[in-house]
Amino acid sequence: MNRLRTWQIYAVGILSIFLLSGAGVTLASSWTNPGLLITPETLKKNIVKDNWVVVDCRDLEAYAKGHIKGAISLGKRCKKALRDPTSRVFADPKKYEKLLGKVGIGNDTHVVFYHGDIKTLTDATVGFWIMEYLGHDKAHVLNGGIEAWRNAGNRLDNKPVRKSPKTFKVKLVPGRFSTTGEVVDIAQGNLKNIQLIDSRTKKEYDGKDIRAIRGGHIPNVTMIKSHVETVLQKKDKKTGKMKPTGYLDADQAHKAFGKLDKNKRTVAYCQTGTRSTLTYLQLRLLGFKDPANWDDSWRVYGSSLMLPVEGEQWFNFAKMNKEMKKLKKKIKALEKK
Image 1 (cartoon, rainbow, N blue to C red):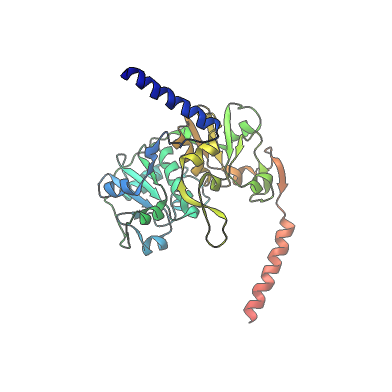
Image 2: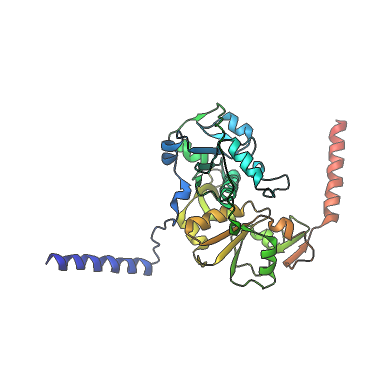
C-alpha cells in the first residue's frame, strides 16, 4: 500500500509539471556553474582569508569614498587597468604575471570582481573573462556588486588595502579568446558550426548608431542580444519605466540564450569587446562548453574596409565637421563672456 501511494505521488508530480508547462508557467531556472557568481554572504565568510582577493572595479575616486572592507583597487577601472590604452588585452601575457602578483593574486587565489552599477558591471566581467583567459580557475563576480553588499546590511570602508605580493603564472586558454581571423571566417561562411552573438544595441546592429568608420553587423550573426536586456530589470521611480540593474538572473539568461546549442563554440562581440564579456560570463554560468569573447570586436572590424558587412552604413564625417564647427563657436562665445 505504501509503495502504491509513493507511485501515486510520483505520477501526480510528473503530471503537474506537464500541466504547468502547458499552461505557459515557467519553472525557475538555475545556473549550471553557480560558483562563478558570489553572494554577499559567501563573500563575507571568505574575504578575510589569505587566499581570497576582492577587486573593486570602479575608479579610484569611487573606491576612496567607500568600498567593501578588505577590497583592493587596481588604481583605475578594471577595463582600463587590465588592458592597454587601445582597450586591447595585453599582447604580452607576462605583464599580467607582474600586475596580478604585485596586488597579491597568486594561482591559488580566489579573485572576486565587483562593480558599482550597471555602467561598471562590464568592468567586473572584463576582469572575470581575462582571468579565465589567463587560465585562472578561481575567478568570480559578486552578483549585484556593491549595491548587493549594502542591501545585505554590510557597511563600507574608506581605508585603502594592500596585499602581500604573490607569484602568478599565466596558463593561457586560447579558446576563450576569439580572433578577428576567426570572425572573418564566420562572416565569409568558412566556419559554419559557430554561434556568433552581437551584444550591442539594435541601433548599432542596424548601422544607425555608428561607432567605427562603418556601421552595421557581421554577416552570419546567430543572435543580437543587447547586454542590458540580459540582466534583471526594475521600475524607475521617476519615469515608471523598466531599467536594467547590475544583477544577473538565471531566468533572464535562459530567456536570452536558451535557444542556442551549448555544445557549439559560441563567440560574443560588441564595440570594444567589453559588453560582450558579460555575455561570456552568462554563457559560462549556463554551462556552454566553448564560449569566447572577441576582444577586437566592431571597433576593429568596422574600420577594416575590406571586410564584409551587413546593413553597412558609413560614418558621416561631413556632419561631424559641421557639429565641431558649431561647438567651437559656442566655446568661443563662452570664453568672451
